[in-house]
Image (cartoon, rainbow, N blue to C red; front, side):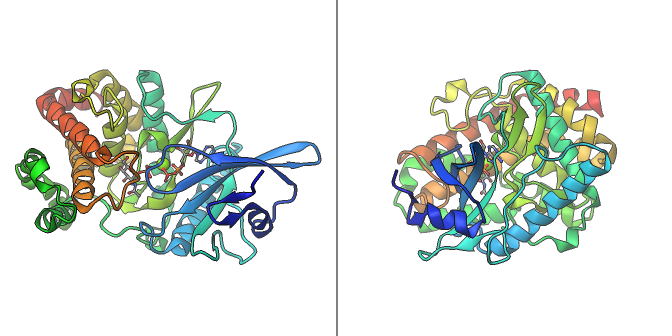
Length: 370
Ligand code: ADP
Ligand code: GN1
Ligand code: MG
C-alpha cells in the first residue's frame, strides 16, 4: 500500500500523533464541503484502532491553531458535563490527539494542516433524513449541545470565521460578486440574482435585532447541517455533535435555522431537480419539538418568535452563498461538477419559496411547542 494521502507520509502522521501500530488502511470519508476527511486504521497487538484524519481547509479557516483551541476547550467542557452526570462521554464528544509539537494540529512540509481524532464506532451520519423520530433526536441533541455550552465562557472563543452568519455582510459579498462577475457567469443567473435582490430586507432582520440588544448572544455551533450529528446505530440516539470548527458566539436561531434548512428539505440540498424540493412540515414539527424539549427553557420569547423566520433566512443565506461562490468561480465550496453550486443555489431558493408559502403553518406548529 502506498502510504500517502496527498503529499503526506502516513508513517509521519503516526509519529506526529504518537500512534503505535501498523497502518492497516486509510480512505476518503464523509461528504463535507470544506475539509478533507479520511478514515485511518491502525493495528496494534491484534486490536485495531480507527481515527479520523482531517486536512483543515486553511483558506476557509485562516488560523487553525486558534480554531483547535476553541475545539479542545469546548469538547473538554462537554466531557466534564457528562462526567458530572456519571455518563460515559467517550462517544458523546470528539477526542483529539495531541501532536508532538504540543498543539492539536500541525503543518506539513507542503503547508497543509492536519489533525487527528478518535473515530466513533457504530454510529451514522445522514445527508438527508426522512424519519421524524430521527429528526426529533437531532433537534434534541443540538438543543442539548447549546444548553451544555451555555455555561462556557464566550469571551475565550476565537471567531474562526468572522461574520459567518452576518446575512447583511453576506449580501454585500454577493453584490460584490455580481459587480465583479469574475467567472463570467452573471448572464446565466439573472433570475437567481433578482431572487436575492427582492429579499434584501430579510438580510437585516437578525443583524438589526442584535444591534438593538433584542437577541442574546450564545455559544453556538453555526454549522448544524444534518450530517454534522452522529446517531447511534442501535438506539438511533443523537449521540455526538461533530464538525466543531465554527463553534463561536452566535444566535440560537442560526443553529435552529440551519438544521431545518438541511434536514427538513424533502430532498438533498444539491438535488438538481427542484420539483423534489420543499419543506416537510412533519419533519419541521419533529425538529421543533425535539429542539425545544432541550433548549426551550433557556430561549427568550423573541428567540422563539423568530424560529420559523430563521429557517427561511438560513436557507436563503446558504443559497446566496452558493450563488456568490458560483459567480466567483467556485473558490469556496467543494464541487463535484461545474454547475454544482448553481444547482445547490436553485435548490435552496426553491426551499425558501416553499417556506414562504408555508410560513403561517410553520408559525402555528412552532407556537404549539412554545
Ligand atoms: P466537514 O467539515 O468537511 O463537513 P466533518 O467534520 O463534518 O467534515 O466530517 C465529515 C464526515 O466524517 C462527517 O459527516 C461524518 O460522517 C464523518 N465523521 C467525522 N467525525 C467522525 C467521528 N469522530 N466518528 C465517525 N465519523 C465521523
Ligand atoms: C459547509 O463543512 P460542511 O459541509 O459541514 C459550510 C456550511 C454550509 C454547508 C452547506 C465552514 O458545511 O456553512 O451551510 O457547507 N461550512 C463552512 O452544505 O462554510
Ligand atoms: Mg461536516
